[in-house]
Amino acid sequence: MDGIIIINKPQKCTSHDIVQKVKKLTKQKIGHTGTLDPMATGVLPLLIGKGTLASKYLINHDKKYQATITLGKKTNTGDSEGEIIEEKEVPKTSLINEYVEEILQTFCGRQEQIPPMYSAIKVNGKKLYEYARKGQNVEIKPRKIEIYEIKLQKIDTENKQIQFEVHCSKGTYIRSLCENIASKLNTVGYMSSLNRIQVGNFKIENAITVEDLEKNIDNNNFILQHLITLEQLFKDKNDINLDEKKLSLFLNGVQLTKKNQDGIYKIYCNKKFIGIGTITQGLLKRDIIL
View (tube, rainbow, N blue to C red):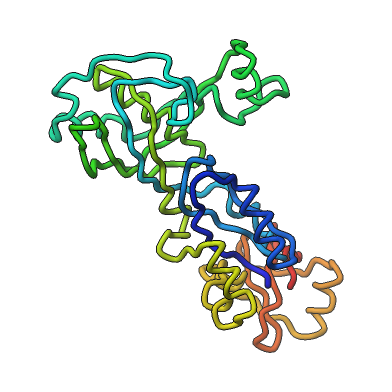
């Protein structure tokens, strides 16, 4: 089993928990393209077997989320798992659709964002949350991000909550975004729910649960239906067909002269998919071999 399976992560478990469960089920090496907070749900692409070798091609994917902000209260973690550290009145205008939509649109585009203190970003060799837990202050440098689209989905006036969908670049912290939106609405707030609905081309509608996988681990049809093979993953890349002599050289690490443009290629021999190769300055070398 070499490729990618999209898992729909439930709440109250870590990405590491999911990796370990799937590793136990498949008895293969498992990797992922980025973690989700324990409170978050949704798309968690898992790289299986030789699919783990494709991780370097998947780390810069943009993402889509559905998030909920609870207004009027601020927590030390920026989400519902933290302690309330501030309370503030919520103006009536902050729960009016037209006004909220107008505020949300101000966040579109390229910008700098300061990551939350409770995050795994390292400063001087230590993760930010390690400083936070000890009550230590540390300078957090802003990071460049981009919000491609953000749209209002629902306003719950009774519970003072705003649900929105956002399409953003890698490295965007939705907890920080929620706090910044609340600030522009002249109050405070925290992220009370988060559901990742897309990572690159991996969508929630194609995801399965770990329980689904466990029930069908010996069902080849189920596995084939939900496994994204390396050939499928690189379907948009051009093909290179090698004869058996050149394939032997290629598999042994010999770089072959090719006039194709630099880039990533699917390698075939006698119509059989062999793996992935790359061309740099006219030389083809092997990368991922099945």
